[in-house]
Structures are given as C-alpha cells and as structure tokens.
Amino acid sequence: ETGVTQTPRHLVMGMTNKKSLKCEQHLGHNAMYWYKQSAKKPLELMFVYSLEERVENNSVPSRFSPECPNSSHLFLHLHTLQPEDSALYLCASSQDTNPHNEQFFGPGTRLTVL
Amino acid sequence: KQEVTQIPAALSVPEGENLVLNCSFTDSAIYNLQWFRQDPGKGLTSLLLIQSSQREQTSGRLNASLDKSSGRSTLYIAASQPGDSATYLCAVSNDYKLSFGAGTTVTVRA
Image 1 (tube, each protein chain N blue to C red):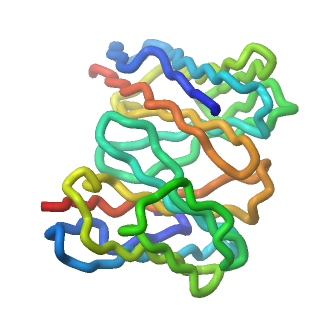
Image 2: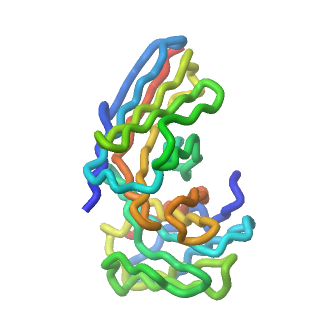
Image 3: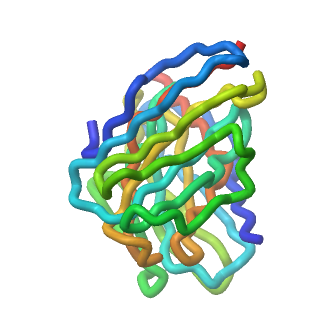
C-alpha cells in the first residue's frame, strides 16, 4: 500500500443514487488529482487541486463534483451517473504542481453504475 | 495535445527472458516520464521516474531509458519472473498533467 488511500474500494450504484468517493494522502503533499480509467482506454485526468484550490477541470460533466476540504483529503461526489461512467477512479498526490514532481497513486475505487 | 503510444499492447515470454517495453510520445517538451506497474483491478505502483535532463534510471532488474528529442522511452526488465506479470504504463508530464499510454500487458510463463 502507498501513502494514498481510497475508500470505498468497490461501489455499485444506480443512476439515481448519490455517493461519494474519498481519498486521503499521508505524504504531506499539497496537490491532489482525480483520474478515470475506463476499460481499454488510457487514464484520463479529471481534476487537479493545489492547496485546496481547483486548478484543473478537464471538461468533466457536472454530475462529477470534486471537493478538497484540506490538503490531505479529496472527495468526488457522484450523482445521476450513467452506465458509461463505470470505471476505476484513481486518486493521486504530489508535493505540489511542479511538473518535475512524482505523482503517487492510491489503489482506486472500482465503480459500477447500473 | 500529447499522445502517448505503447507497443506492443501485449507480450508473453518464458521465465528468464528479458523484457523490452516501448513508449513513444508526440510532444518532446516534457518535464519527466514515469513508468508504472498495474496489477489487475488495482492502482498504480511507480517503478521509475526519469527527469527530462536524464538519459536513464535503474532500479534492481529494471532499467528505463529516455530519448526526449526522438520522443521515446524503453523499459527493460532483466531475467523476467512470473511475478512480473502485470500491465506496465508509461506517462509523460507536460506542466503538472500526466498523459498516459494504454499500457503493455505482460505475461511471464513459468
């Protein structure tokens, strides 16, 4: 396990449900990221937070709503999702948004939308 | 827009053989390149990070080279073992964003 944890590890939800994914990093980092990994597709960056401020929203639909209450925690709130949103959602952190920094990934949440 | 390609998409080798995994990228203005390992259904484990000013990095049986001007990186895994079976991803950094390849799925046969 890395210094980045994610809960839950698996989630099944209906299209009308509201749920949240949680990410916590224990590395003292100041930047956190959400990525989506769909079947047979490369990882896609969704959101980037630096010092709790959102610095990137990579054209993600509004049914995904991120929240970063402090530099150690990152949430992804989900509502009225579609079956095509089923994917592995990965959280990552880095010291800051300096492009030379290494990103450290959590184990992911496997989301299935019915 | 950065495009990252990994060839081959899948690779099966007998135990003990050396592995060669290729990664190419279209925009050479990168800050670094990372190689990751991903086991089925799991997150990413960082293997090697090569800064743009470096030519290679080594860790144990792993060696990664970077030719930034030609947009290529190669990951070598010496004396492969069944435990090396996984998907290997490369990712390049343009500003703070990582662009990923689709990965090479490796099977090492005992």
